[in-house]
Length: 365
Ligand code: COD
Ligand code: ZN
Image 1: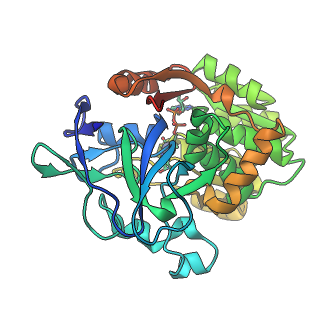
Image 2: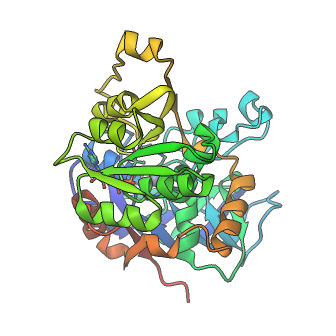
């Protein structure tokens, strides 16, 4: 099959023939139909975040089950599925506590399948898996807990987005922060994930939603997704602007960029007792710094958010219900569709901030 392989940081991906083993016990073979290009993938391509190479990236995807390994019960060939990048064992202390996105399995896999081996091979060596998904490929072998069956009449691009951007962004608001109606909210970074934080805040009933970005077209998009105000951080100081727009500070602020400096801005723009949520992952070399007395005397909170703190099998059907009810904008997020062969163009477009979300589409006919 064809797959996009990252052999070296900073280099274009090689779209080439890759060998994919059949699914083993408890695994599922998925024919990828649509897969998103997310900034997390770009972090690894650029080397801001580090993982073992060579690797097949891609973690936001949907497709059709082609085969299942022994013991698989929740899906069968022909089912349409969303791929989940946090496989969960269902037994560890985190799964038992109802926080399967923190499952111990995720920490163990480190570029492999849960059993420690790889199903992907090229040029005579094993390739690494990315978050047990590796969807920038025609097919993927994933753990059963990494797929969720969805209705067959849904667009694949929409299902792919539910695998990351939507679940992460809306989940940050509804699960991690638990924004309450009437709140004031600031969102730093209005890409594919940040726009979902914006619409999550709208769904939660926030009355003031301030979107911050450096690209005018992203500010326009944020207004369509529910922002009541926008700030261009290239022109204006976002902390001061947010404090002015929220009568002294926001109740909640979300950092959806992945920079220590903007996490600090998210903390600084809060009202007393406010909560900042760090969704973006800063480069490994950056440490987060907090203003000691102002943070403590004003009783602020800084929370981290991974994968929207989501219970995926509970949350994704609810997100789909919001979509069907016309309250969650998903089709509007997809602004370009390209074939896998043009993945490097899609990555460059993300780096420039073109459009909102590019989807790589495979032929599934
Ligand atoms: N001030 C304001 N806006 C800024 C600034 C700044 N200083 N710098 C960049 N921006 C804007 C850009 O113009 C862009 O519009 C936006 O920030 C970022 O958007 P995208 O589309 O490039 O990124 P997303 O939405 O695909 O991803 C954002 C994440 C923060 C999720 C990602 O970068 C990340 O850190 N991921 C790691 C966390 C993780 O693992 N999450 C789960 C999988 S995604
Ligand atoms: Zn992502």
